[in-house]
Image (cartoon, rainbow, N blue to C red):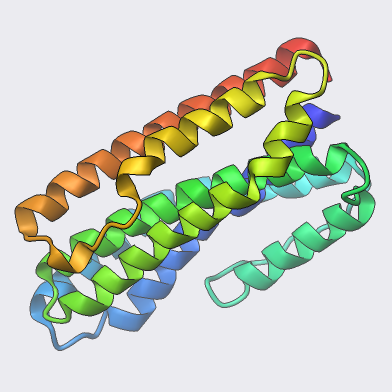
Length: 230
């Protein structure tokens, strides 16, 4: 059960990366900034490629929810209604598994990991757009906001990481959390608006490396729960 709770927590949030980019496309596809418009067009092409995978992911979330007798509506989701659907999903799971139960923290921990990954992915998108767009400051501010969101999410994971590590053979949850905090340390207090193009590209590379480390830790947590058979 806890393995599936962890899985659905991560998967329910994962489509936010897709739908955030979809919203970007709808906002800027007709931009008078030609460089930005071209970049947004390539974004649309990528979304077309990912569309089927994203729909399968949402269907998987609905199926996993069904294992817990939680009924999620199967509907055609877009950037306009996905986030309301996601909030409903979270509310239903937290009603079934309140924070007074340890089960709550499997869903919460994985969901917050997914939020971190999505923030890092969107940060990368905003950095790439800032390099080509006339309105660089706006996109750099959005990237900086994502960076602060990651810092805040890490803060919110302090207690869940400690609680889960107290379960039998779960010590890695706290180990992983401390690794994330250490790896994120170089990004704190970063002022993206002071960076040139070369520095932004280097920063984006380092963010991608941090994202990879988060995904590796997530996979280790998943494998641990699977091996424990919980």
